[in-house]
Length: 462
Image (cartoon, rainbow, N blue to C red; front, side, top):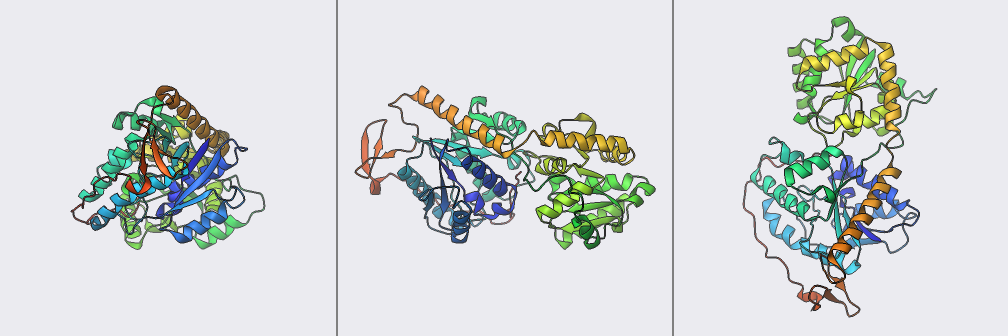
């Protein structure tokens, strides 16, 4: 089975976020399935440096000739509405390139690209190949506070229309699957849950490793600590975590700093410091690490007294799994996908209730036996996730859905990408119609006019 993986998620700004890391890890795990799949990659010429980086990354994993690059006019980033016509024109160009490669399956690692970067993604209305899309979440659809510009919302709606056309969705959690069924009306047999995994660097501390001592000195962590790691947008609910920390008795706070790991600017930091003061905590009880490497983050996870994750909405909640992999005691929100990751009720809290968060923090910080029990549970739970298992689920789902569609359509049905015959012409199985390549019909192109204000700089993800 020839699977063509569109890996633009590892070329755009997503490469620095969970989506890019997920896409890379899943693709590498798929290449390790002992030759079961004929895997090849599709990349955009608009990101030449990333093309070379990915080519080097897969140099030994893929045979020569398995890296394919498509070219399209740029710029196409739809944060600027004047690029809309090029974005529409580039989609059939990408689809033609895919048709020429004659894949059995096209796996789109991230459909929701092309707003802030020059990526081109789409699911065609018809294709001989099964088109599968990785489904991370539908947060901008569920939460009104994510997209506030008309043209951003229009872009997202177009992507949702494309998502509905996919023959298969590979969901990263049961919650993401349920959300797609409820919000988009997609049948359950078109969505397979393949889960995810933490990177191998996230493991319990190694005796003798002095990294945590360096981190304590660098970030002035002069006591035990409660750790949070992640983003700082509204849905991450960090304000309520800070308020909950402030509710802890002064002696408990004196023995435990609140360490906030993640990138944020000075304005956001000042704003959260004011939240702490209004809630009754001194800003000096908080520690801000900024961005940290995975290795440093693993050390912070492994030595914290408790890891707290108060998010209101996740597609999966990878920091929770990372923390458990490192042996941390975890308390977390009872919302969306997070309970299925934690798989334990007595460490969950209601994220909109500050006292509920504070109660869970106090229970763990005040009971060493409970803290140890949660750490053991976390390590055991984390062992249930691996990239090998995720890749196996993905491969099985692709094969099963391909077989199902073939059975439904029969040999004469055409559901997608037309095939190139030996003469270099497109051949439509539905009507045995042959068109020269340069006469492939293209959709009409329209120019979108709307304000550029309020365009997001990044998108929710793992």
